[in-house]
Image (cartoon, rainbow over all chains, first blue to last red; front, side):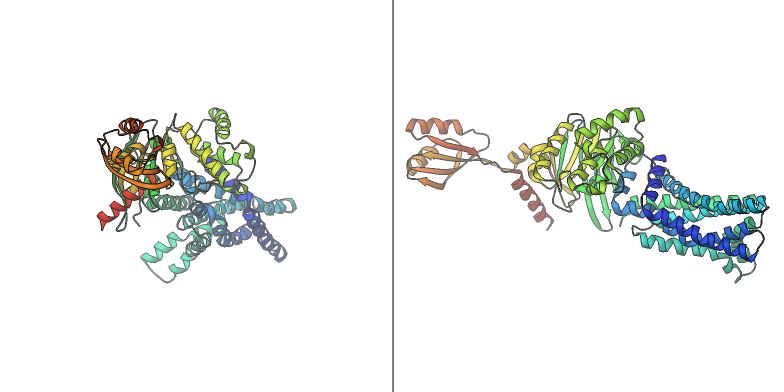
Amino acid sequence: MFAVLKRDFKSYFNSPIAYVLIGLFMFLSSYFFNSYLSYGVSDITSNVVSDMSFLLLFVIPILTMKSMAEDKKNGTEVLLLTSPARITEIVMGKFLALYCVFLIMTGFTLIFPIILTVFGDPDLALIFSSYLGFVLYGAVFVAVGLFASSLTENQIVAAIIGFVGLFALYTIRYLASYFSGFLYDVFTWLSIADRYNDFMNGIIDISSVIFMISLAAIFIYLTVRVVERKRWSQG
Amino acid sequence: MIEIQNLTKEYGKIKAVDNISFSVEKGEILGFLGPNGAGKSTTMNILTGYISSTSGTVKVAGHDILENPVEVKKRIGYLPEQPPLYLDMTVDEYLNFCAQLKSVPAKRWRSEKKDIMELVKISHVSHRLIKNLSKGYKQRVGLAQALIGTPDVLILDEPTVGLDPKQIIEIRKLIKALGKNHTIILSTHILPEVSAVCDRVVIINKGRIAAIDTPDNLSKMLSDFSRFSVTIAGPENKVRNALSDIYGVKYLEVSNRIKDDEYSYIIEADKDVDVRKPMFNRLAQLGFPILELKSLNLSLEEIFIQLTTTEEMEVQ
């Protein structure tokens, strides 16, 4: 698992992908940070982090698109799958490599709360819960992107599937408003955005934490199944 | 070492591999010969656990590929048709990664890496990016990858494709040398390669085994007669009379007139009679010297064509 993790992580930084994405992400979130500052909004960090989650919708699919698709295209998938490592270990390694890139990207944005702490007195507990929410949210997004990448050997297609998947996940709460009763409850329960907003408001609900981790785990599991299924395919 | 029984792989209605069975002994180099699309790569992909079979079993050192895939994969080094290389890594990084992936202990790996790199002669390119290497070197790096962890079994899918003639000879020598410590299955569509390297040949066509034997036996099996080409100095009719009297000679024909009273003949004789000695004695008595004598047993190429075409006729 660590072999795959290390290799993939390095490869993101050997190509311009990680740098371009982190740069773009920092540029846009700094822009948001700057405008909140000039408008004099309170709880700047949670507002910025909330906007950052919207940026992830575009950034994550581009980051994850090559994770599995490239191996398929280059034939290196054979190397991984015929090695004694288990498929779960390989997929976990790939997930963690992506997640590390995501965490580094998130790490750069810590500059915002640091600036605020130097020049003011922000609510540190709120900052913590916002970032906890963001990091969990990112795990789900990365897992969905990884899953999308396992479905095809074309990176562009993988990015589009990833984007559509994340978009559906992001907007599921709007579906809820069309329903009432049981379906309303189901969609609200599924709404990752609602749970995310709780974190932004400083509410750390343990069921939300478990929900996010489980959702990420489900998509990692689905990725493993896709890789396994291919082995058994008859067509 | 390797046992394959009733292996079948279906893709929809197409049978890529159709009920094949064979086994490979420890230390043997087995050649897998067949035209393009015969099912060579599919079989190798099943052996290595990359894809699964529709039915049938594969056992490596007693472990079933479905029941105990990890044990099987530990024992196999695989070089697929397209070497599985990460182009953005250096040779060194790539081999280190493969060693980690195959869980080779770090201590053992340090000495093993040196040996492998010297064996396939890539030490001097170890710091170069794989994407900048020539096809031949990429192939060697792929082969180095398969050797990592000294697996008992090596499965090499067309290992000499894309190499220049000198490299081909080197790689063949290398494979021969590796055969002393490894069991090797090697696929190819280059016929001389099989007779140059392999102890035994499986000829596969349309997913089925057309023949399985040693390269020599295959030549013998297919010809009911042993054939010779002889050049003899002496008048044609006298030589002809002298030779056709010999026990075992079934057929005699002039193939070439070299000069006056010097002809080449094609002779076919019973397989179990050696006609060469009586031929020599008779001609010596008459004072017609033999200038040249060579065996014309079927080359592997002819066997290959013969086997795969008869198979085709059966199917039709």
